Image (cartoon, rainbow, N blue to C red; front, side):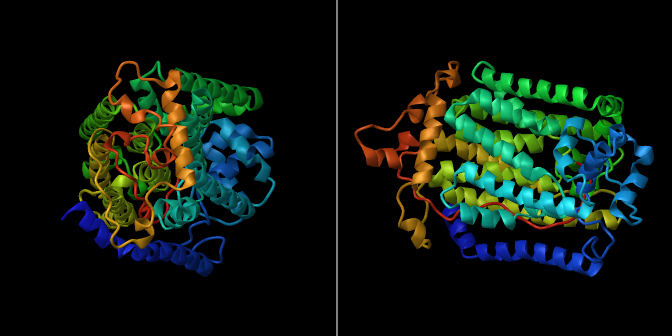
Length: 493
């Protein structure tokens, strides 16, 4: 079955994805209603992960900042904040400076603080989509809401929309050629350092080219460290003293973890001498694949940025289901920058969507049945998706572009070029590529693909995609198949 035929089959059934995504929200809200809204029917606190951030900020508000890392008193302190005897413990493991962000709502009740930060998070989700510049932002937002990791961010009370916004803004700044500013903004991710892994790997491939990015991220990191030590010295000492325990913390529910490390740990429980080497080997292979892609595509921004986003999640030892909401940034960039291959993207995005929708539940069922091992099915699926998409990205830059099948999509068939928003994004990509600071002097492969359109041909300027120009193909936008999915609860930061 060809990509075109499979994509046509999927397009007629995309509505089903909205239904599945909507069911997750309806079930969650119904569960909360049965539990009295402050907790669900099973007795789990509303947006429980938010309690880790709220209690840390409240400790500062109460004049006892070091208490945010004191596990001996944290449980009783958190119970006093929520007003009932809950069995859960939400450990704060971020650096001290991050707790300052929640200080404005520390004077509110826990429940009001959760509502305020949920509203802020949803606003950040909308901002992220617009920063990425899709042709149809409303439709992308619709798919985002139906994407299970996005649902998990809200229902768990997590902060992944902030991370998503940082990634989206970094992309926009790099498109403009503002590498130092992009690095400064990326440095905000020091509140959760594993999310920097993908960016660091990407920038390490061509360190001279991305020197400004390195400088920016270091400046932000040093500035945030200074804030922590100057404003919260006691908490900073407590953070250093508990750092080893924080790094090794394993209190999250395993079924919510979606990384190669968690996959091998659940597959081979109690055998760290086996699952750690396997994890490191798989991550090393993934980085090697990314490096080969970088060499073959001259480090094109629309190619390497999605790979960096994926690696930040894939290579992290601590990426839970809600953090995969950040993958939206990679999906939107790929969909918008390479429209000629939307049949391909739709097929692989659908597989990733389904895998992230069902894997957490399937893993939990296996654990509840006390099977000798657990298979987190999302990891093999995401591995295949990542591998195949890197191959298609290489072809998008260096090979002939397929024609997207628009027979069953009149809206797509009526279009033959990017909308103005996409055209401006092409200009941004050209600004990044033509900036002398961003030239890959060691690998001038396919530089003609990144040349600016002919000034005397406005139609050509509208129809040319920066990474596919040599093929002379016209880009036909199609149904954006954004990822999405449904599942359950976890804790941690």
